[in-house]
Image (cartoon, rainbow, N blue to C red; front, side, top):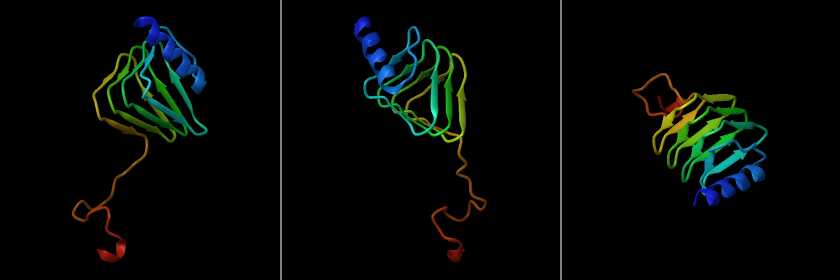
Length: 114
């Protein structure tokens, strides 16, 4: 089974133009979409089932880190995940701001409705 995982991960890395590193595992359903950006995965990185990475900027994931099932990462500019970081399932990470100033008004309301 280990050989199959290694082979599948090497194929995925080759397809995406990402260098394969020792002990790396990318689940076949994980998606990495780089539109003008770049992804750097260190050795031992694990991308579980359903992980989606959208990268227009730079994404660096450190040695031994693991993104659990259905985690989504969007790097418009630069996102760095350190070494030996465990990220739980269904987590969203982004370097973009989604804040609004008045929490009393739903974000879907236009300025005319205030």
